[in-house]
Image (cartoon, rainbow, N blue to C red; front, side, top):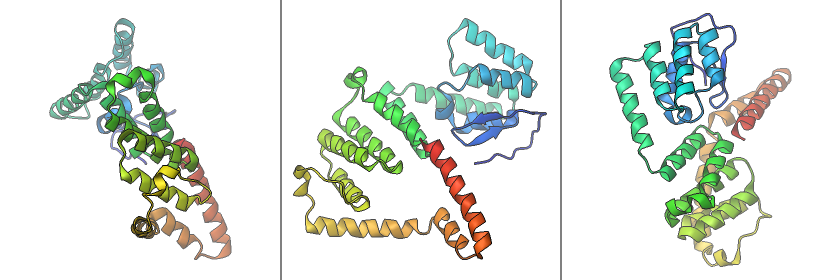
Length: 270
């Protein structure tokens, strides 16, 4: 991801935002991230390091002082995000009002649902390690009174999806087993079967065997085949295919670049 916006400030040390894989070079970019990624910035985003960036790099000492005094005299709140949008004046008052309404609505969600939304948000950004930490924390005993069996099933399903993305298939299998134990959806059994297709040495518990009929397997394998065909058209795959069509020297150089990029993306995932 990259941002190319109009306002330019004399930033010499940009602010790293690892979750999005970018660096912020202006107050406009900072406001863009706050406005478009609310669930990313509502917890732990405002900190001393960011305030120093606002003061020293964006040359906005008045805003930095306001943020500092707020944090000294009151607990951190969403008002700090609103202050930044207000002082930077990149978004109109109507847009700021809509943003305030969106954040307020998120805060009104039941705590468990709010946290799940945060986990889902991280998952959508391919931050599977962060998503896992949110989901697993929700399943701790302290949150038990807030969780229905259906919600616990969804959480275990999402945990399994994260582990699958991280190639931890044994852990994914265990998570799907836990998901099925909560709400008994046959969808989880299908996904267990898909895991065995990816890693044949995995074993499925006996209680699921009767659901894995030849008829079901035939249907599931057709779905898997369609998914694999769709995956072949994804940009990363087509880029690599084009690389191997080049001459040997260019092919090696470009393949190295792509593999290094994949490594960086994987490190971000975990």
